[in-house]
Image 1 (cartoon, rainbow, N blue to C red):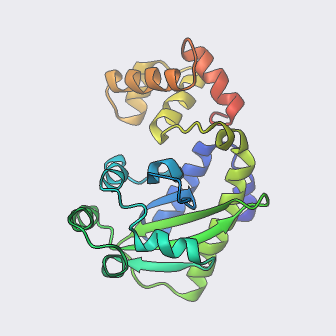
Image 2 (tube, rainbow, N blue to C red; image 1 turned 180 degrees about the vertical axis):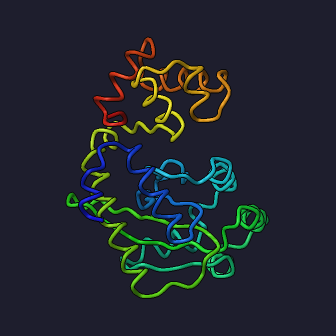
Length: 232
């Protein structure tokens, strides 16, 4: 596993690796994030890479749950892994109508438990790797393996993403995917066929990411993305 992680070159590589590992352990989603500080307002702002549906994170932030969440509170108080099922989360969070609504949304996405693995980098920055899904029971060996995966992946992500953390630029998984295929010489129509989206949607992603990167066209966007480590 360590040697496989060492071969990851971009954030897109990390996303693909983590999706495979999450599925292998019976999880639906993962998120790698910075431990939110008291100044942070949103989970989206703390997230580094994730395959959690955008609507879930957006609702979480719209409901203002970051600072009332029992999971985030505990994360600031411990450096050891812990698990939260929905009942735990509800009991240890500040009760609200927004919280109750968000729990219904989580259940609809088959998220019954969150598994938190606190990590840190050599510069002292604290992060967390969170696995989410419906599975509840894990052996000690599985939990230890998940912890080791979390440590190695977070450190690798920090190594290849220092510039990205410094400039605060974050791209979505789809934007990174479209950039990688563009770098491979594919047209919008070809990319649409490969990843199962409409050509209009692919153009939307590419135009949006071009603006994010401050590029004048797609070619310059790819060059900047390569320099920043998003594209191999």
